Length: 343
Image (cartoon, rainbow, N blue to C red):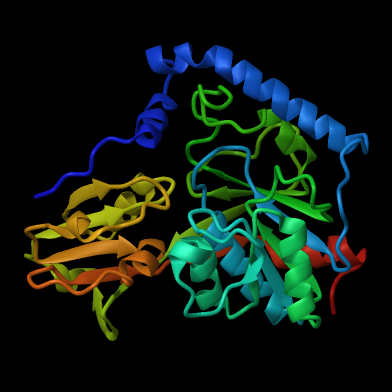
């Protein structure tokens, strides 16, 4: 059975759990990173670097910690909830992991190698127009040019993209919190925890942690999902009990694979774990498992579907998850944007 090799990303992620030797050696570099990030933000706040406003309200969903905290399922939840309240949201993303060099729209059949795995997943789940680009301002303009009826933009993972002026900021915090409390690359922090005091809302993804001190309103997000579908035959469905007695491998290439593995264990499943770096570009050899089945995330399924069929490969079962947020975050967004409760 092929095992994935340790990568620099995985080594760093492991180092961020404590203040060991690798993290400590990187502290001087983190000082330089923090100084540069602080200077850049200060230049935008003082207007010495230009930020640009789009003709519709912009709601940024992001975080202060590198790696996955649950922003993608939150974006999907907000897009659907806002649409149910009468909005016509569009979504802008960096398209991390994709090869797009200019702003572009993401069609439902987009190649994740071009547009990025998360934008493709969001486009398919929500049906909303999605644009990707390193320059979120240009991506937002392209989306509005192609879909002028859009009346609100959700910006995926754009908290530090200060070139795009925003009307609301939502920060996602998961059970890892601030990790070892150090800045990149000695720790996971893109910005200091004090940054959370300036956002409009905080979403706590799982766990029982309280709202950070001095922060604004907090919301709790829970992810649920117990129905698997077969990657090469979406009409074939299974629940956890249908895998009883089978040899299973759980595969995840997301920001925090342990969250997926914990979810599966909560469903009563027994399996071998295989964690890959976030946005991993899968090759056929990554699936050379002696097993009855492979369990994976919806985000990984977007990329795995592009692999050519191979004889003897175990069937791949994808587990979509759905976010639920309490209290009503979508309604709070409209209240803040409109200055009044929505109808």
